[in-house]
Length: 249
Ligand code: PGA
Image (cartoon, rainbow, N blue to C red; front, side):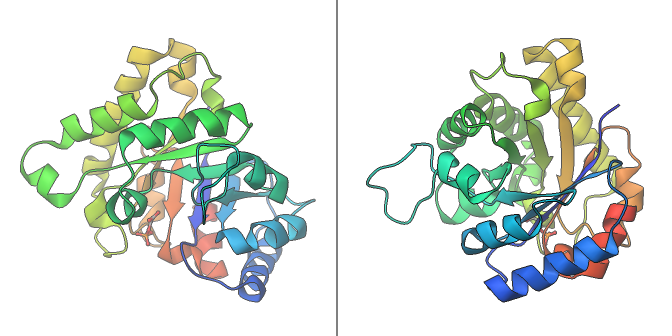
């Protein structure tokens, strides 16, 4: 049985004060620890204050990105040890906005995965096709490449330490959600890829989240599907009551 994960990706939103207000709302509104792993990913400026606020709560904190090196001359970057030190336990890696706007590749995603796991952060590795790739019939090729290259060399790690998020690029922030059939098809394909690189127990233990315009109205249907183990939520995670409704789903 995989524990569902509901993760809020706040992207470049929320000042420190706004971030604390938002987690206060989520914390007070959701009092049912244990059934769902709840994670929030504030901008890096708010990781520490949010983690401090949530210290004794059942809500965990994620970074939205990281560098694969531990320290050094990489202006503007933060590394896994810094994220850990700031109080986060998770990190989002390879989000499509990072791939699209910051030229991240499967190779850099893979380096980040190794560093995250080494430093005891749970990586949420994002994969997903563009509309063009889907329409050209390249959906499976793209997903396979992103999953296999992203996970290259990490077969020996505990599977529970890895989360994958399937986020079709055409569904992110557009209000267009994948249908249940579209989502489940890709999720079960990802599961079959995991079986190629892990033994059955590990492959079945990895949680695969759906992301892309998930909201309080469509969450229940998507989350009921056999291979959808939670959600990575952008827009709808910025309003406490919407996010709580998704957790309750
Ligand atoms: P969205 O974003 O929910 O606003 O579509 C999801 C994401 O980018 O993780």
